[in-house]
Image 1 (cartoon, rainbow, N blue to C red):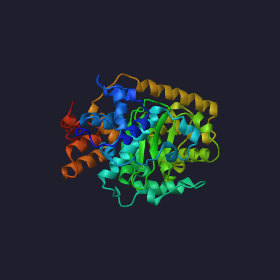
Image 2 (cartoon, helix red, strand yellow):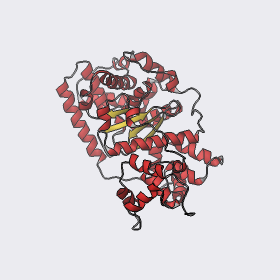
Image 3 (cartoon, one colour):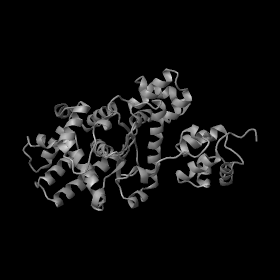
Image 4 (tube, rainbow, N blue to C red):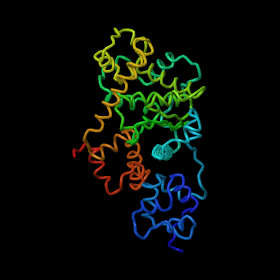
Length: 388
Protein backbone atom coordinates (compact mmCIF):
# COMPACT_ATOMS: atom_id res chain seq x y z
CA UNK A 1 0.00 0.00 0.00
CA UNK A 2 2.97 2.32 0.52
CA UNK A 3 3.50 2.39 -3.27
CA UNK A 4 0.06 3.86 -3.90
CA UNK A 5 -0.06 7.45 -5.10
CA UNK A 6 -2.05 9.76 -2.78
CA UNK A 7 -4.63 10.50 -5.47
CA UNK A 8 -8.39 10.77 -5.01
CA UNK A 9 -10.14 7.73 -6.55
CA UNK A 10 -13.41 9.67 -6.82
CA UNK A 11 -11.65 12.17 -9.09
CA UNK A 12 -10.30 9.33 -11.26
CA UNK A 13 -13.86 8.12 -11.78
CA UNK A 14 -15.18 11.67 -12.33
CA UNK A 15 -12.48 12.39 -14.93
CA UNK A 16 -13.29 9.19 -16.82
CA UNK A 17 -17.04 9.71 -16.78
CA UNK A 18 -16.85 13.36 -17.87
CA UNK A 19 -14.59 12.25 -20.73
CA UNK A 20 -17.36 9.87 -21.83
CA UNK A 21 -15.17 6.75 -21.58
CA UNK A 22 -15.74 3.28 -20.15
CA UNK A 23 -13.10 1.52 -18.00
CA UNK A 24 -12.39 -0.76 -20.96
CA UNK A 25 -11.82 2.19 -23.31
CA UNK A 26 -9.43 3.77 -20.80
CA UNK A 27 -7.48 0.52 -20.54
CA UNK A 28 -7.27 0.31 -24.32
CA UNK A 29 -5.98 3.89 -24.59
CA UNK A 30 -3.33 3.17 -21.97
CA UNK A 31 -2.06 0.56 -24.42
CA UNK A 32 -0.64 -1.92 -21.92
CA UNK A 33 -1.58 -5.61 -21.89
CA UNK A 34 -1.38 -5.69 -18.10
CA UNK A 35 -4.04 -2.97 -17.84
CA UNK A 36 -7.64 -4.02 -18.33
CA UNK A 37 -11.04 -2.67 -17.35
CA UNK A 38 -10.86 -4.40 -13.97
CA UNK A 39 -7.60 -2.64 -13.11
CA UNK A 40 -9.10 0.75 -13.99
CA UNK A 41 -12.12 -0.06 -11.81
CA UNK A 42 -9.80 -1.00 -8.93
CA UNK A 43 -8.07 2.38 -9.24
CA UNK A 44 -11.45 4.11 -8.99
CA UNK A 45 -12.35 2.01 -5.94
CA UNK A 46 -9.14 3.04 -4.18
CA UNK A 47 -7.76 -0.51 -3.99
CA UNK A 48 -4.94 0.41 -6.35
CA UNK A 49 -3.53 3.40 -8.21
CA UNK A 50 -1.82 3.99 -11.52
CA UNK A 51 1.90 4.62 -11.36
CA UNK A 52 3.13 8.13 -12.07
CA UNK A 53 3.77 7.68 -15.85
CA UNK A 54 0.30 6.15 -16.18
CA UNK A 55 -1.24 9.04 -14.26
CA UNK A 56 0.52 11.52 -16.57
CA UNK A 57 -0.88 9.70 -19.57
CA UNK A 58 -4.36 9.68 -18.07
CA UNK A 59 -4.21 13.39 -17.26
CA UNK A 60 -2.60 14.80 -20.42
CA UNK A 61 -3.70 12.48 -23.20
CA UNK A 62 -6.84 10.63 -22.13
CA UNK A 63 -8.80 12.87 -19.74
CA UNK A 64 -7.35 16.27 -20.70
CA UNK A 65 -7.14 17.34 -17.06
CA UNK A 66 -4.31 19.04 -15.15
CA UNK A 67 -2.23 16.51 -13.24
CA UNK A 68 -2.71 18.34 -9.95
CA UNK A 69 -6.49 17.88 -10.00
CA UNK A 70 -6.14 14.15 -9.18
CA UNK A 71 -4.65 15.05 -5.81
CA UNK A 72 -7.53 17.36 -4.82
CA UNK A 73 -9.44 16.37 -1.65
CA UNK A 74 -12.79 16.40 -3.45
CA UNK A 75 -14.24 16.42 -6.95
CA UNK A 76 -14.01 20.00 -8.27
CA UNK A 77 -17.07 21.88 -9.42
CA UNK A 78 -17.06 22.78 -13.08
CA UNK A 79 -19.46 24.26 -15.56
CA UNK A 80 -21.02 22.07 -18.22
CA UNK A 81 -22.04 22.85 -21.80
CA UNK A 82 -25.58 23.41 -20.48
CA UNK A 83 -24.48 26.10 -18.04
CA UNK A 84 -21.91 27.59 -20.44
CA UNK A 85 -23.98 27.82 -23.62
CA UNK A 86 -26.96 29.60 -22.12
CA UNK A 87 -27.91 31.14 -25.47
CA UNK A 88 -28.71 27.69 -26.92
CA UNK A 89 -31.70 25.45 -26.11
CA UNK A 90 -30.93 22.51 -23.79
CA UNK A 91 -32.01 19.96 -26.40
CA UNK A 92 -29.43 21.32 -28.86
CA UNK A 93 -26.68 21.20 -26.23
CA UNK A 94 -27.57 17.62 -25.34
CA UNK A 95 -27.09 16.64 -28.98
CA UNK A 96 -23.55 18.04 -29.27
CA UNK A 97 -21.24 15.32 -30.68
CA UNK A 98 -18.79 13.68 -28.28
CA UNK A 99 -15.87 15.17 -30.20
CA UNK A 100 -17.16 18.71 -29.68
CA UNK A 101 -17.76 18.02 -25.98
CA UNK A 102 -14.15 16.82 -25.66
CA UNK A 103 -12.95 20.04 -27.30
CA UNK A 104 -15.13 21.97 -24.86
CA UNK A 105 -13.36 20.25 -21.97
CA UNK A 106 -10.01 20.98 -23.58
CA UNK A 107 -10.98 24.65 -23.76
CA UNK A 108 -11.95 24.56 -20.07
CA UNK A 109 -8.50 23.16 -19.35
CA UNK A 110 -6.92 26.11 -21.17
CA UNK A 111 -8.95 28.47 -18.99
CA UNK A 112 -7.55 26.75 -15.91
CA UNK A 113 -4.03 26.98 -17.35
CA UNK A 114 -4.48 30.71 -17.99
CA UNK A 115 -5.63 31.18 -14.41
CA UNK A 116 -2.52 29.37 -13.15
CA UNK A 117 -0.11 31.14 -15.51
CA UNK A 118 -1.46 34.59 -14.70
CA UNK A 119 -1.58 33.65 -11.00
CA UNK A 120 -5.29 34.59 -10.99
CA UNK A 121 -4.53 38.14 -12.14
CA UNK A 122 -6.15 39.74 -15.19
CA UNK A 123 -4.19 39.40 -18.44
CA UNK A 124 -4.78 43.09 -19.30
CA UNK A 125 -5.66 46.19 -17.30
CA UNK A 126 -8.79 47.16 -19.24
CA UNK A 127 -10.41 44.02 -20.71
CA UNK A 128 -12.64 44.46 -23.74
CA UNK A 129 -15.53 42.60 -22.14
CA UNK A 130 -15.48 44.94 -19.12
CA UNK A 131 -16.00 47.91 -21.42
CA UNK A 132 -18.66 46.63 -23.83
CA UNK A 133 -21.78 44.45 -23.69
CA UNK A 134 -24.56 43.45 -26.06
CA UNK A 135 -28.20 43.60 -25.10
CA UNK A 136 -31.36 42.57 -26.90
CA UNK A 137 -32.39 45.06 -29.56
CA UNK A 138 -29.20 47.13 -29.33
CA UNK A 139 -27.94 49.15 -32.27
CA UNK A 140 -24.91 47.49 -33.79
CA UNK A 141 -23.14 50.31 -35.60
CA UNK A 142 -22.17 52.36 -32.51
CA UNK A 143 -20.80 49.35 -30.62
CA UNK A 144 -18.92 47.87 -33.59
CA UNK A 145 -17.32 51.27 -34.22
CA UNK A 146 -16.30 51.55 -30.55
CA UNK A 147 -14.90 48.01 -30.41
CA UNK A 148 -12.99 48.51 -33.65
CA UNK A 149 -11.41 51.60 -32.08
CA UNK A 150 -10.58 49.61 -28.93
CA UNK A 151 -8.90 46.91 -31.04
CA UNK A 152 -6.94 49.61 -32.83
CA UNK A 153 -7.63 48.45 -36.39
CA UNK A 154 -9.22 50.91 -38.80
CA UNK A 155 -11.16 49.93 -41.89
CA UNK A 156 -8.32 51.44 -43.91
CA UNK A 157 -5.80 49.08 -42.32
CA UNK A 158 -8.15 46.14 -42.80
CA UNK A 159 -8.48 47.01 -46.49
CA UNK A 160 -4.70 46.82 -46.89
CA UNK A 161 -4.48 43.18 -45.79
CA UNK A 162 -6.04 41.67 -48.92
CA UNK A 163 -5.68 38.23 -47.33
CA UNK A 164 -7.91 36.19 -45.04
CA UNK A 165 -4.79 34.52 -43.60
CA UNK A 166 -3.42 37.93 -42.59
CA UNK A 167 -6.86 38.94 -41.28
CA UNK A 168 -7.14 35.83 -39.10
CA UNK A 169 -3.71 36.50 -37.62
CA UNK A 170 -4.21 40.24 -37.04
CA UNK A 171 -7.69 39.94 -35.55
CA UNK A 172 -6.44 37.19 -33.23
CA UNK A 173 -3.59 39.39 -32.04
CA UNK A 174 -5.93 42.33 -31.51
CA UNK A 175 -8.43 40.30 -29.48
CA UNK A 176 -5.73 38.72 -27.32
CA UNK A 177 -4.24 42.16 -26.65
CA UNK A 178 -7.58 43.14 -25.10
CA UNK A 179 -8.03 40.02 -22.95
CA UNK A 180 -9.83 37.53 -25.22
CA UNK A 181 -7.66 34.49 -25.93
CA UNK A 182 -8.03 32.54 -29.16
CA UNK A 183 -7.16 28.85 -29.46
CA UNK A 184 -7.56 26.59 -32.48
CA UNK A 185 -7.91 22.89 -33.13
CA UNK A 186 -8.84 20.51 -35.93
CA UNK A 187 -12.47 19.81 -35.00
CA UNK A 188 -12.80 16.94 -37.50
CA UNK A 189 -16.40 18.08 -37.82
CA UNK A 190 -17.24 20.62 -40.51
CA UNK A 191 -20.65 21.40 -38.98
CA UNK A 192 -19.03 23.53 -36.26
CA UNK A 193 -16.85 26.57 -36.96
CA UNK A 194 -16.05 27.25 -33.31
CA UNK A 195 -17.33 28.09 -29.85
CA UNK A 196 -16.50 30.42 -26.98
CA UNK A 197 -16.39 30.20 -23.20
CA UNK A 198 -17.13 33.25 -21.07
CA UNK A 199 -15.10 34.06 -17.96
CA UNK A 200 -14.77 37.34 -16.10
CA UNK A 201 -10.95 37.10 -16.40
CA UNK A 202 -10.14 34.47 -19.01
CA UNK A 203 -12.73 34.41 -21.82
CA UNK A 204 -11.64 32.46 -24.86
CA UNK A 205 -12.65 31.57 -28.39
CA UNK A 206 -11.96 28.11 -29.80
CA UNK A 207 -11.86 28.09 -33.62
CA UNK A 208 -12.01 25.15 -36.03
CA UNK A 209 -8.71 25.25 -37.91
CA UNK A 210 -10.07 22.77 -40.45
CA UNK A 211 -12.33 25.38 -42.04
CA UNK A 212 -10.99 28.15 -44.31
CA UNK A 213 -9.39 31.22 -42.70
CA UNK A 214 -12.21 33.34 -44.12
CA UNK A 215 -14.71 31.36 -42.05
CA UNK A 216 -12.45 31.51 -39.01
CA UNK A 217 -12.41 35.31 -39.26
CA UNK A 218 -16.21 35.42 -39.19
CA UNK A 219 -16.25 32.94 -36.28
CA UNK A 220 -14.01 35.20 -34.18
CA UNK A 221 -16.60 37.96 -34.25
CA UNK A 222 -19.65 35.73 -34.09
CA UNK A 223 -18.20 34.30 -30.88
CA UNK A 224 -17.16 37.74 -29.65
CA UNK A 225 -20.83 38.70 -29.86
CA UNK A 226 -21.71 35.76 -27.60
CA UNK A 227 -19.03 36.85 -25.14
CA UNK A 228 -20.50 40.35 -25.19
CA UNK A 229 -23.72 38.70 -23.94
CA UNK A 230 -21.54 37.32 -21.10
CA UNK A 231 -22.26 33.78 -22.26
CA UNK A 232 -20.65 30.95 -24.14
CA UNK A 233 -21.85 30.18 -27.64
CA UNK A 234 -21.41 27.95 -30.68
CA UNK A 235 -20.95 28.92 -34.33
CA UNK A 236 -22.84 26.39 -36.45
CA UNK A 237 -22.00 26.30 -40.16
CA UNK A 238 -25.43 25.01 -41.17
CA UNK A 239 -28.05 27.66 -41.86
CA UNK A 240 -30.69 25.04 -41.03
CA UNK A 241 -29.61 25.18 -37.37
CA UNK A 242 -30.43 28.88 -37.18
CA UNK A 243 -33.81 28.26 -38.81
CA UNK A 244 -34.64 25.68 -36.12
CA UNK A 245 -34.28 28.21 -33.30
CA UNK A 246 -37.08 30.30 -31.85
CA UNK A 247 -37.59 33.30 -29.57
CA UNK A 248 -34.62 34.47 -27.49
CA UNK A 249 -32.27 31.82 -28.90
CA UNK A 250 -33.01 32.90 -32.47
CA UNK A 251 -32.63 36.57 -31.59
CA UNK A 252 -29.18 35.98 -30.09
CA UNK A 253 -27.89 33.94 -33.04
CA UNK A 254 -29.22 36.45 -35.56
CA UNK A 255 -27.64 39.28 -33.56
CA UNK A 256 -24.30 37.42 -33.39
CA UNK A 257 -24.29 36.98 -37.17
CA UNK A 258 -25.31 40.60 -37.74
CA UNK A 259 -22.65 41.81 -35.32
CA UNK A 260 -19.90 39.84 -37.11
CA UNK A 261 -21.11 41.08 -40.48
CA UNK A 262 -21.37 44.74 -39.46
CA UNK A 263 -17.98 44.61 -37.79
CA UNK A 264 -16.17 43.06 -40.74
CA UNK A 265 -18.17 44.74 -43.53
CA UNK A 266 -19.44 48.10 -42.22
CA UNK A 267 -22.51 49.07 -44.20
CA UNK A 268 -21.43 52.65 -44.76
CA UNK A 269 -18.17 51.34 -46.22
CA UNK A 270 -20.01 48.91 -48.47
CA UNK A 271 -22.15 51.82 -49.75
CA UNK A 272 -19.03 53.20 -51.45
CA UNK A 273 -19.03 50.36 -53.99
CA UNK A 274 -21.07 49.56 -57.09
CA UNK A 275 -22.67 46.28 -56.04
CA UNK A 276 -22.69 44.26 -59.25
CA UNK A 277 -24.09 40.75 -59.18
CA UNK A 278 -21.16 38.70 -60.45
CA UNK A 279 -18.56 36.35 -59.00
CA UNK A 280 -15.86 38.80 -60.03
CA UNK A 281 -17.52 41.52 -57.94
CA UNK A 282 -17.94 39.15 -54.98
CA UNK A 283 -14.24 38.26 -55.23
CA UNK A 284 -13.16 41.91 -55.29
CA UNK A 285 -15.23 42.82 -52.24
CA UNK A 286 -14.18 39.69 -50.34
CA UNK A 287 -10.54 40.57 -50.99
CA UNK A 288 -11.05 44.21 -49.97
CA UNK A 289 -12.65 43.29 -46.63
CA UNK A 290 -10.58 40.06 -46.17
CA UNK A 291 -13.73 38.01 -45.62
CA UNK A 292 -15.41 35.11 -47.39
CA UNK A 293 -17.45 35.54 -50.54
CA UNK A 294 -20.43 34.19 -48.60
CA UNK A 295 -20.25 37.12 -46.17
CA UNK A 296 -20.35 39.49 -49.13
CA UNK A 297 -23.23 37.61 -50.74
CA UNK A 298 -25.17 37.72 -47.46
CA UNK A 299 -25.02 41.51 -47.69
CA UNK A 300 -26.38 41.33 -51.22
CA UNK A 301 -29.21 39.12 -49.99
CA UNK A 302 -30.12 41.46 -47.14
CA UNK A 303 -30.15 44.39 -49.56
CA UNK A 304 -32.47 42.53 -51.93
CA UNK A 305 -29.89 42.37 -54.72
CA UNK A 306 -30.10 38.56 -54.97
CA UNK A 307 -32.80 36.10 -53.94
CA UNK A 308 -32.54 33.20 -51.48
CA UNK A 309 -32.24 30.56 -54.20
CA UNK A 310 -29.24 32.33 -55.75
CA UNK A 311 -27.64 32.77 -52.34
CA UNK A 312 -28.11 29.10 -51.40
CA UNK A 313 -26.78 27.94 -54.77
CA UNK A 314 -23.61 30.03 -54.61
CA UNK A 315 -22.98 29.33 -50.91
CA UNK A 316 -23.22 25.58 -51.55
CA UNK A 317 -20.84 25.88 -54.49
CA UNK A 318 -18.23 27.82 -52.49
CA UNK A 319 -18.54 25.47 -49.51
CA UNK A 320 -17.78 22.50 -51.74
CA UNK A 321 -14.82 24.31 -53.29
CA UNK A 322 -13.43 25.10 -49.83
CA UNK A 323 -13.93 21.50 -48.68
CA UNK A 324 -12.11 20.15 -51.73
CA UNK A 325 -9.23 22.55 -51.16
CA UNK A 326 -8.89 21.56 -47.50
CA UNK A 327 -8.88 17.88 -48.49
CA UNK A 328 -5.92 18.30 -50.83
CA UNK A 329 -2.83 16.32 -49.67
CA UNK A 330 -0.80 18.33 -47.22
CA UNK A 331 1.13 18.10 -44.02
CA UNK A 332 3.28 20.59 -42.29
CA UNK A 333 5.57 20.55 -39.31
CA UNK A 334 3.92 19.28 -36.12
CA UNK A 335 5.43 22.03 -33.99
CA UNK A 336 4.24 24.73 -36.36
CA UNK A 337 0.75 23.27 -36.03
CA UNK A 338 1.02 23.51 -32.24
CA UNK A 339 2.00 27.17 -32.62
CA UNK A 340 -1.07 27.76 -34.79
CA UNK A 341 -3.36 26.04 -32.33
CA UNK A 342 -2.02 27.68 -29.16
CA UNK A 343 -1.02 31.09 -30.50
CA UNK A 344 2.19 33.01 -29.93
CA UNK A 345 0.84 35.00 -26.97
CA UNK A 346 -0.01 31.87 -24.97
CA UNK A 347 3.27 30.12 -25.88
CA UNK A 348 5.29 33.20 -24.87
CA UNK A 349 3.30 33.37 -21.62
CA UNK A 350 4.25 29.77 -20.78
CA UNK A 351 7.93 30.23 -21.57
CA UNK A 352 7.98 33.60 -19.83
CA UNK A 353 6.90 31.93 -16.59
CA UNK A 354 9.48 29.20 -17.12
CA UNK A 355 12.34 31.63 -17.74
CA UNK A 356 11.36 33.50 -14.57
CA UNK A 357 11.62 30.20 -12.67
CA UNK A 358 7.91 30.30 -11.85
CA UNK A 359 7.20 26.86 -13.34
CA UNK A 360 9.32 23.71 -13.97
CA UNK A 361 9.98 22.24 -17.41
CA UNK A 362 7.41 19.51 -16.70
CA UNK A 363 4.73 22.19 -16.42
CA UNK A 364 5.85 23.71 -19.73
CA UNK A 365 5.24 20.33 -21.35
CA UNK A 366 1.82 20.08 -19.72
CA UNK A 367 0.71 23.60 -20.67
CA UNK A 368 1.85 23.16 -24.28
CA UNK A 369 0.73 19.51 -24.53
CA UNK A 370 4.20 18.63 -25.87
CA UNK A 371 6.25 15.81 -24.40
CA UNK A 372 9.12 17.08 -22.28
CA UNK A 373 11.68 15.21 -24.39
CA UNK A 374 10.39 17.04 -27.49
CA UNK A 375 10.58 20.56 -26.03
CA UNK A 376 14.07 21.28 -27.45
CA UNK A 377 12.72 20.58 -30.96
CA UNK A 378 9.66 22.71 -30.23
CA UNK A 379 11.85 25.62 -29.15
CA UNK A 380 14.05 25.22 -32.23
CA UNK A 381 11.16 25.38 -34.67
CA UNK A 382 8.77 27.73 -32.89
CA UNK A 383 10.82 30.10 -30.73
CA UNK A 384 14.08 30.18 -32.63
CA UNK A 385 12.69 30.16 -36.15
CA UNK A 386 14.29 26.88 -37.14
CA UNK A 387 13.35 25.13 -40.37
CA UNK A 388 12.25 21.52 -40.78
